[in-house]
Length: 262
Image 1: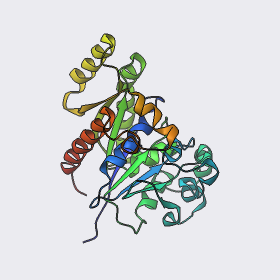
Image 2: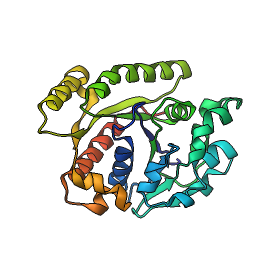
Image 3: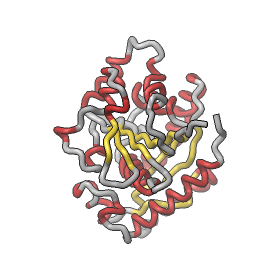
């Protein structure tokens, strides 16, 4: 029987909540000799791709080349500096995807169909989504088996969580997607801030088991890593951020095992 990949989308329609930080470092945490991971950058800013060391002038071929120009997806896959982790880059052309795909029949299924054509067997495919529910974002929801929602302990981010989860459920119901919420992830946590603690407790009280036990604390190492084009494990492997992402990787794998199989 052919091995099937589990597709995980990291999604939030608010910017600055740690989506790319989560996607890049969680993908690196999950990559292992017996677990091959593909990271797909779906953001026109291509932050995940730049973080992985791809120069802006070398972003093409990208996910936009596949989604909008029918490039065979296998031709867009490239290796990263992390063993067992491959990448499909993002690029600025993704910003015009809504217009380009507007008249395409079954346009919400474009990404799902592309991922099903990948011959290389990946255990996990991680989608770094744009900060909106545009057509590219909807494509990610349709393609995904599971969703991770990063949220910071800030007032607007916490307040927006209710409407975000409601929007995700409406998309799922309308399009009949199979995606399940794998977990809400508290990111950019400063344990010294009392108001942040109150908001974290509020999220945990309201969503209970839907919230990952692991929290990603704000740290200098995590701030420095993207500028050096290194994952947290390459930049500061013994840092508390690296420890947290390893713990998150274990949690994600445990939750993935309980997903319904299709």
